[in-house]
Image 1 (cartoon, chains in turn brown, purple, green):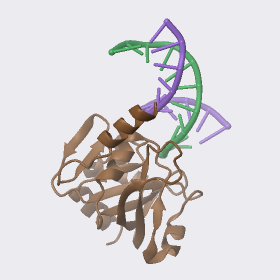
Image 2: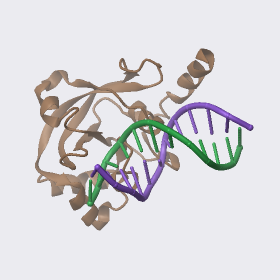
Image 3: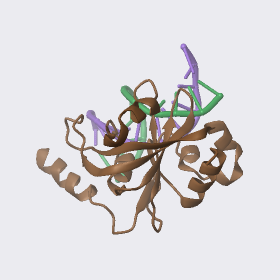
Image 4: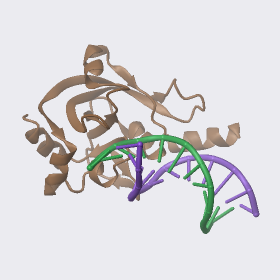
Length: 171
DNA sequence: GCCAACGTTGGC
DNA sequence: GCCAACGTTGGC
């Protein structure tokens, strides 16, 4: 088992090409030029935006991802990429924008050694948080992974989606 | 708290 | 390699 796991680990964990490739179910390598935008989810009772803000410029490791599609998205993140910070379960809204400050490395909370984390820091809050209901009500956002793959905890966001959500959020 | 959706595991 | 069972996520 260790050898096989190690082999798979090395294989899957490679970043795809020099451009960014966001991954969603059924579209393993959706090639998108200059994919710089993401969305990460957290239950605020586990890790909230306020806690993230409190970490300041040092940021915090985004640990606990245990899904292979989400892992691939973590691997594909580049330093400087932006991510919406979404509160799942409670709030159900995008509350802020975070920035990737350290690229993928082994998740220290994962004993199996299969998963990775990145470090992110809070950049700024959305003046008006954007709720899941507002997103579902906006036809232009019908293809957002948040809507189509609701269980995916680390998702790519297109540049158009990013712009629109920022606008809806008062930026 | 319920339950639909869906990812993962393991038996065959 | 299929698929049933199981576990988890997350909106409602």
